[in-house]
Image (cartoon, rainbow, N blue to C red; front, side):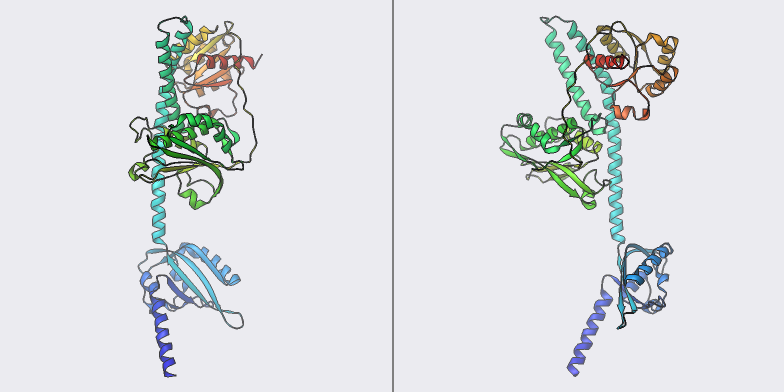
Length: 520
């Protein structure tokens, strides 16, 4: 008997020590008086009280006043169900400081089933909140950096596009006037090719800034990859084996197919370049997956996305991998680890994914390859056909176009393109001058071709003023930005067309002819 008493005493002493030294705070509360019956030493140490001070203290005295409404809700839940919990509450220490805690409450009942004691466990989550705060701060800083870079990239691309209008336009006009046997024809074609490549770079910048025009359709992501099979084989090194692992079921997403193709090609060529001159493998996978809040929070661009099903595109390579310091910068415009490269490929991918409300993850280790995974929100799948565009025929028939732009070289090239196609023209340097010129004789002008970004009176204000002056005024807007971005303030107003810089003579004439045809 003495042995059992000794063992029981040792066991009780062990449990008391375990109870007092536990990392969480424990307390037993009288359910009638709502006062503390006993507590562990951890609670006293965290809150700065002695046990004598805590025992008999009203439970409400431990909580921050902000929590009283939440405590009332938890009490009602406890009375009804015998348990309660909360992830975020605040306790007050003896010095008046705030301690962030989570709470779990259970009940102890007598033989009659009555609650005779509630047992509370508080866990200090202050460090978790600090980690969350730092993560949120880092995400905010990253978002601000991306926003600033996107704004810069979009501005640069817009200015480049204005200059490229002159380069491509003049090259096109010269070529149209040169005889096929001209000795300078090849040189002009080389200029045109170089300018077109520059235009491609500005499109990459616009993609990063999210300023590309989008033509939204529903499509099967796997089918898009299959259709690009031959093109992808040509784009990669002959030493690289391209492996397909495509979902058997459709992967339905919504977006701009052209831009999604650009994402695929950019990632594929990056993977091939990473493998280099040695033999290697690039694998492209598609599929559907459910992404919860935690998964999205650990992606780039995914912190604010809704949990749900996403179609994914994953491209892996067996190349040299990416160093940790470089991995943080791979989406920055003009950053590249290649000996030859402009550093816009992944920046464009990021912009396209952002504009599609998607997310991405990059896994990479030096000498162990790289995997880039893109998520697009899944949609109901509706097969679609590819519409064929046909250029309208006909000439300008001497109809007059009012051309409005603050860039002299854009005015000159656009005017020459129109004149070459049989139109006549009048030029205006900004919206204010356009309104003055048009107002003298509205019937003189068949179409107004007008830039959106101009000093004194921009294209948006001028468009509104022109259509108020003449509701039948046919206005075609042009910009280095996408139609969606450039015309978002014109919702509900009927302009007759939009053309993005740089444009060809055919594209310009087609836009004008389409505007004229609407009233035919």
